[in-house]
Image 1 (cartoon, helix red, strand yellow):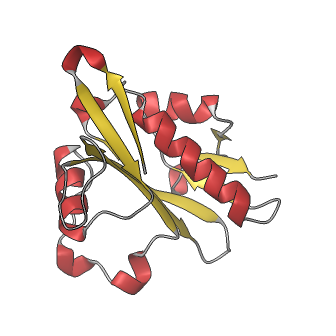
Image 2: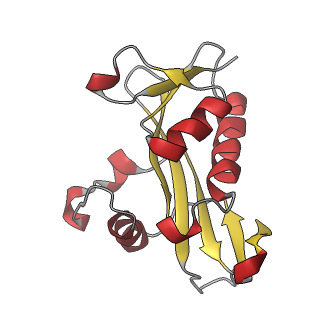
Length: 156
């Protein structure tokens, strides 16, 4: 886990951890960020457990058993074709532009490079500033964006 402070004008520090948030935290974050709403009973833990996740929380590294406020998450799952898909890529609106998105996505890319065979496709659905960031990190527009993820990156 490491800590960063990218918004000194607000004196806001963040900690990043390679862990999935609790389900109720993820649902709350999705709602706050204007993402599609789901109910807890729609999740099957076996189907939705990510291969890898990065959570961003306010403040310094948390103590075991305590939960600092979740402000961002990115998680990766494997699809049926053994390609990787970034399932959640969320940063609360008030913390966008802080560098969190880039740091979390760079960690995902490092994980994917370590885990996946060359030629594996990493896919994501991103719009606006997230799409611009993904392009900066080597993602390209997908030819079948109307069917799902609009960006992909072949891993080497």
